[in-house]
Image (cartoon, rainbow, N blue to C red; front, side, top):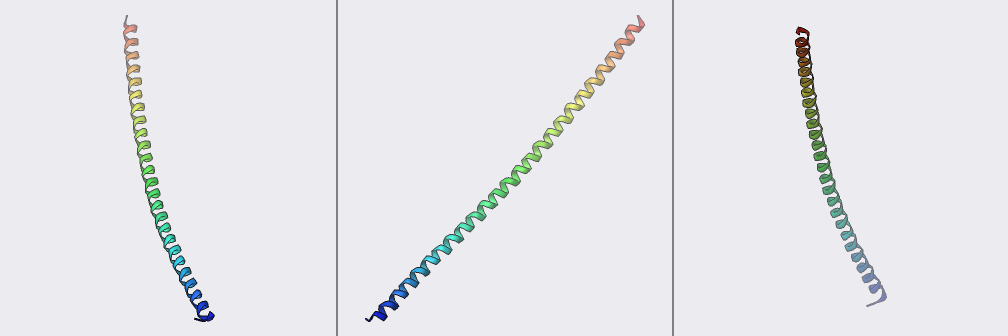
Length: 93
């Protein structure tokens, strides 16, 4: 073998090594991109679930508040009637 053949072989080997390395880099990049995409999807799903849960809790809180207000109004109205009834009784005496 001559030095030209050695040079050609070295160039071929270097090219193959660079090609293999490039292939590995591309494969790794694809895997990373896929993993990032999966993480994004999971994060988006979790965020949507949290939003939904928050809406549900807020709605439930509003309902409870309405019930409390309604109950308080009933109690106040009942107390007002009771006071009027007692006042009438006192006037009759």
